[in-house]
Image (cartoon, rainbow, N blue to C red; front, side, top):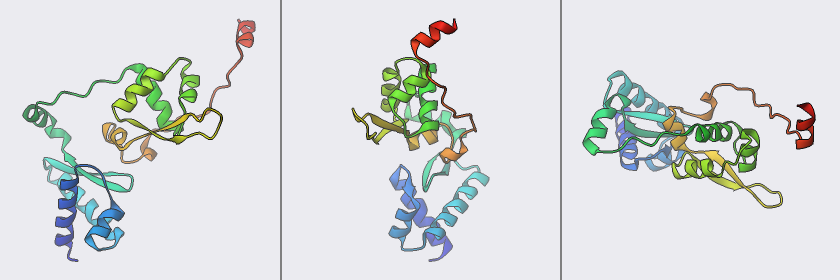
Length: 184
């Protein structure tokens, strides 16, 4: 398949999808190698960025998505009369950070690290589609496991979780209340 024809096919798929489309899925639909689709999609993304177009193509793990250019956000917002997404509270940011770095993780670990009940924060993050349930832990009670979503990556301008800043992930030891009182 010719490069320009492949570019047109990728543009059409990404535009019509309105959400991330996997490289393998596009390759199957177009009938060419996944490496060719990936290379061509990257070239398209570079062209859009170089020409400072109103739309851009972003990579999210093993998929690509077409979205509006951030520089044009004010015009898009005004034209579509959309509201700004609600800001995250500090409690929600703390919970989201823990889930992002320890995923998949349970609400119990989030609460252990934060030291407070995190039910509301996790519920709010689920409603905002920044996290999702991704199974259950195989222990008594079978608690839900949570992980971040593609919306999380888009919201924070990341291509993948590997772009998260490095942090010390050692979990502090939890002391029994009697031990805490004796240390005072």
